[in-house]
Image (cartoon, rainbow, N blue to C red; front, side):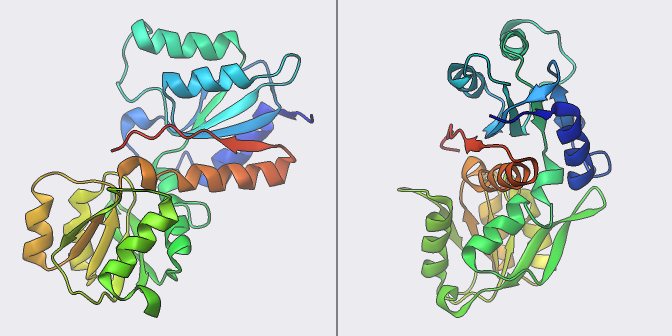
Length: 264
């Protein structure tokens, strides 16, 4: 199996994702979060840097091979600047012991124009991106386009979202606040229920995201939007896979996706 210097991959990722330029939550800490001794022999993509993800990567590491790069959307440091004790220690200690580096990309991956969660979901739905909407710290984060004819029936769009994400019953949930025949559809993956107002301001009639708070039902009904909550986890499985595939092709490495659904 071939191996590539970790530093070379990190330099490429930082530039390709604009990891240092895109605004994000402080605790996202985009970029390389855990270093290793210097070589990478493959790529494992996952949504979350959970203990289950790390343990599975370790279980699959072959003896003598350069370890894989663990590429995630949600990194290790969301609980802030806290001591490396308890579960934080166990995660990091396991990575260091097995020489596994970890790279995290949050908002830079959500809004990437080629491998981003929003763009890839739009592509899966056959939705040509016509524009961007939704301000996130001064940056437009969501994409929108006109629904293709086969998806203008609201129920057909809902079914296709489930198909695109591979979700089963109960699957995506619809708040039917808008028209039965949809036209302008927007997407912001993850926990973007608070962006329903931005979707309304952009003139959309249907908004697809991962999850939202209780009050978002009334936002949807009173602003006249269809809102599809397709799951925070499910809507964010696409970007890391697209990015891992891109990296694997560029650096001649194998890649795989580790699926650890949360049901949320």
